Length: 183
Image: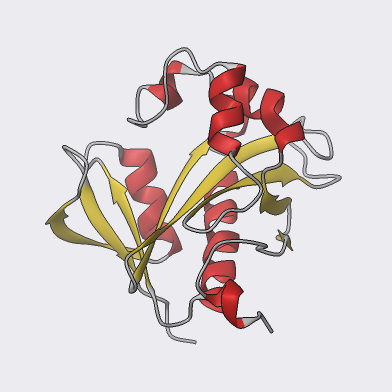
C-alpha cells in the first residue's frame, strides 16, 4: 500500500510490467534515449510543449528533478523478446501523468516511430492507467486529443476513454475521460 504522502503526488510510482513493456519513471540517465525517441516532427508537431528540434537539454528538462509531485513522465521500454526488431530495454514510448486539481489526473503519451502501429501505445497507456487506479482510485483520468488525430483518438477509445465532446484546455483538442469497462 502507498503511504499517505504518496497518495497525493506522482512521486515514487512503482515500475509496472505488461506483456511486452516495462513502464517506470524516467531518470536523468534516460535523457539521450528520450531525445532520440522524441526528436521526430511527427511527435514535436503534435505536442505543443515539445520544442522542435527536441534537444538533449530539452530531454533533461522534461525528465526534471528527482522529487516529482504534480507531473511525471514514464518511459515504456521493451521487455526481452518483445519482437518487432526491438531489443530488451529499448525506449518505445513515453507516458506523461499530470495532477489536475484534487479530482483529476491527465494522461498523455507519444510513441517512437519504429514502434508505432504495433500496439505499444495502447499497452503503455493501459499499464499507466493501472498505476493511476491504484494510486488515485477516486480521481478521474482524462486525456486531451485533437479529433483529427485518428491514431491517438482510436488508441484512447480502444483502452476505455470516451470523447466528452468538451473542448480541452489546449487549442483544437477535446477532452476524453477514462471509463473502466465492467468486469
